[in-house]
Image 1 (tube, chains in turn cyan, blue):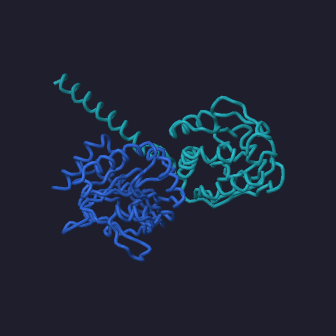
Image 2 (image 1 turned 120 degrees about the horizontal axis):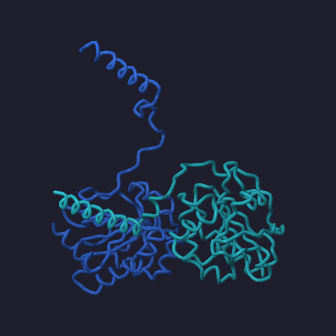
Image 3 (image 1 turned 180 degrees about the horizontal axis):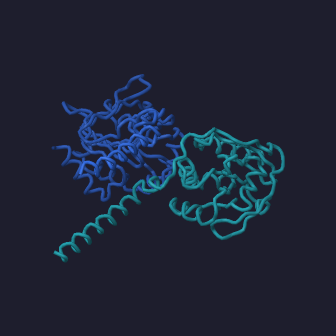
Length: 201
Length: 204
């Protein structure tokens, strides 16, 4: 009887493990997503403007590097992609989309700096589900949301807006899209702006 | 005995009444304001009506067997095939990106056999994707079968907001036209096994 029970337990455990593997390979990422529901589209007051120098910052990246915005001056166009929070619905899709268009960014000599107010361990776990990202992901965790606050996109809840900021090689802001937090910015809008910046340079 | 049981029962009843009237029971709460989600496509059910932008390219129209017409939209039923396999995907979905080579392999396998190619067509619908984003996915993964955009999430909502990738196979001719005989989330594994399974299921 005891042997039979052990056998059943082993089989059931095996089945559970097998199922969880399948799950992880097929949309399992979304099973771990916390859905906050529909939020107010924006909840902050932007402090930067197109045509002005982008405020510099230094943040730790998931890759282990310490990255400053000024490192890219004269070298690359930078897209700051602020996302509100890890493990939430729209954010979990946005960067995997950017991850397959690295050639488009390269065409315009641009890179992305993904920024979130989450801490490094959280960002490490979350972005690990996306596959290997070609761009740096920075943590604006401590002092909490300081960079988001500097740019005027820190929401009252402590997360940032869903915001795209394009900065040219001279460090000047060329495009700002404080997007509805509930929606994903269309890729073509961003690529069009990169093209414009590229043409000016 | 009654004397011992009755007070206990009263306490339980009082607790139940308090629980119900304090709003502790979900049945006592007002109904959620959010609309009821459409059901997820399931075997034995009909595929919900859906409109897709009519493809302009002659090669795509030829693949789908679409007649020359000025119609701006088509529905899956307009596609000339015995079996229609629909992949619900998103350019932004890492799992769909991962599955893309397998789906391409399935398409090549189908096309390599004239008899099977005459029976099965594949289309993809990019939920929440613009035509531009669908085009990016098509180019990146060299997808040979037609992809359509569902940029306003209309189809997504009508198919119960399924997680991607999600595969639906329907009968697309005869008495069982539009009837779903395969519907599943996630990758389908080996393309040869999956194709055989589809053919077997379609015969049932």
